[in-house]
Image 1 (cartoon, rainbow, N blue to C red):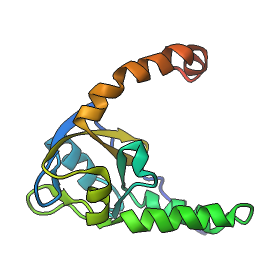
Image 2 (cartoon, rainbow, N blue to C red):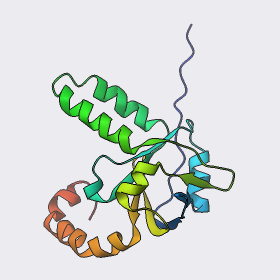
Image 3 (tube, one colour):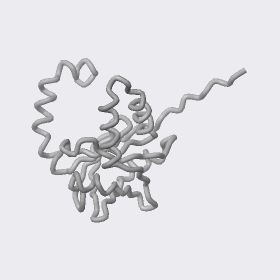
Image 4 (spheres, rainbow, N blue to C red):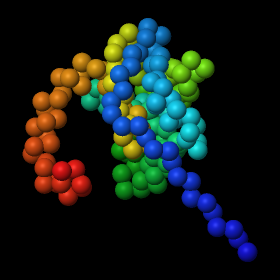
Length: 163
């Protein structure tokens, strides 16, 4: 008789924005809470990329979430051109990343160049199975726009439990 497969629960993600800095070599020193969270992942693989530099955001996909996205896109028969374009752009800017022994992640060169991430302050935010990376000055500049979006979307957000 087959044994039931154990469902692996993920560790609880830390909340809030995390201030960090991308150094001259393109490395981000991850805050301790974020490092602790990431090393607890069942799958340590991470992929850093962006699919639209104009949005000003990079993402680090963790816990093999990038592999799941690739699998879904490979099945996108209805819009194969868009799926292929998404993969080409994501791979152009992206690459596999690891946490080094000093708790740093080195971002791919094309990604750093496109988002001007060299010797700059950034904000890190966990959303789903990604770490979103924003230039710190962009976060501050976007707060008024984000507040306007929240005000316009109160009913939809309330339906999601965000009251």
